[in-house]
Image (cartoon, rainbow, N blue to C red; front, side, top):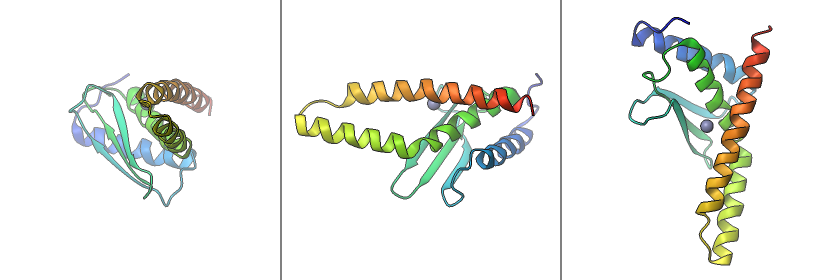
Length: 135
Ligand SMILES: [Zn+2]
């Protein structure tokens, strides 16, 4: 698949995929999601959030997402994380509270929850992108 020629073209496509899949995934329109480019970390994309205010920041690494296929995959992946966020937030809170009560370190269980979520998000992303190819 063709690579992006410049940053302007990349930003346009990034915005287009984001708007398309935000709608398709029925993400609450009231939730504020900021979309931007970030190269600083060695990941394709990442999401940060403040669940109490329903604010999210999706960062896409334009150096890693060289083709439309990679870019679309990264955007859908991060939007699935946002879709699952109410569950993720609750699971993390329960873990923190339970381990605080036990006086134990919650980090191993939080790490395991994150790994499981990555597996689920990756699978749902490939299902959704697979369905789209037959539209
Ligand atoms: Zn992920």
